[in-house]
Image 1 (cartoon, rainbow, N blue to C red):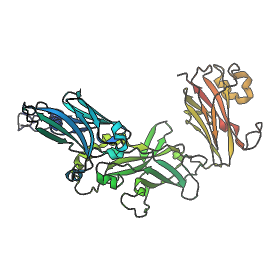
Image 2 (cartoon, rainbow, N blue to C red):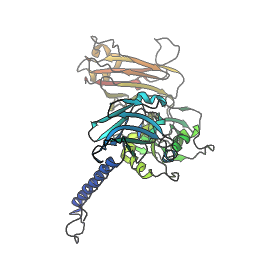
Image 3 (cartoon, one colour):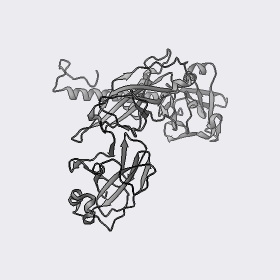
Image 4 (tube, rainbow, N blue to C red):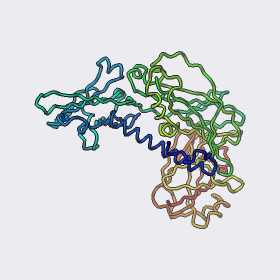
Length: 478
């Protein structure tokens, strides 16, 4: 009788006993799985972790046989072997890795492929009480395959006869090379302007954007056939794009963009270099409420939906790529901020101000040490941005807001002025880094000014209302 079944077979699972029934069923399944894993550890080589990412380390455990045979045989040596596939093993194609003598305690490296002799470490039953272990560090794709331990027993009857016990891993060691984060490029369908950073372009409402996500394909090497297919035989890469919105109430939520554009790529040969890159396109009609939103794309691996015939470890592989494990493998692009406005020229502050005062002409933001503030101008030619920072005396913030620079003598904290904080400039953008040290004034007025490139420092801000560019920052000291 299953342990999780009720004693009374007539008892029907209801809302009252559903949780208890589910809990007992889960416990039963965990016990059965643990029992299965224990049996596996006794009869096969266990490889962990598997799959493993480069750079990484894996451990293969060979069950100790010291108490499994007749008393006149004693273990004399253990040899670790790798084979690219089961068929290779049957054809005698195998790679001897390392040999350990239990009598002399001598270790001999047998393979120098990819420096394997310096990457392999063997342990007697000390690291694990019931196993001999093999550790391989600095993994490379060619370390894939089935791992085998051969334990040699020597007769103690004086006949000098030997007995070899061979154990193999049920599943191959699967290796994943590293991948770069995907890159998101945003452009307008009506113009040739495109940018991966979202710098310099502010789009009017109702324009449709073209989103393109480029990514390195996930690859997996388990058998020799995977090496021939450049790692894309068993695994595929899916791409998705998202828009991160901020409501007027400062709430944040994420929506997946579900308007893909199908583009036919040229025919590719299996295992070609082109198969190691993937791309996907989407269209995004802009709305005014998208102003200040961020776009991202992500790449996620999964077992192929059309696997080749004869892959006996496919069920195991599917288990390794469940939703939880997939989450640890997902890669994401850098966010691209979008600007939506019908104005000729627009200046944006990041992070977005928490609130606005003075008829929404002055913004208030909260910053902490080591945080970066960015000022960006859109829809303009090449302009140079400058930041002017004025520390405000304690209790004088309302005066600073009402009088602005005209009343600076009444609210400026002259003991802290001028403020020497690091700024980083590039085309149409400037960044300000809040220092990590103690800050005397907790409130500052910061003005972002745009000037044509080449004009001297005393030039007045050109054709931008100065009040649009003023905002107040409150710096919290940790």
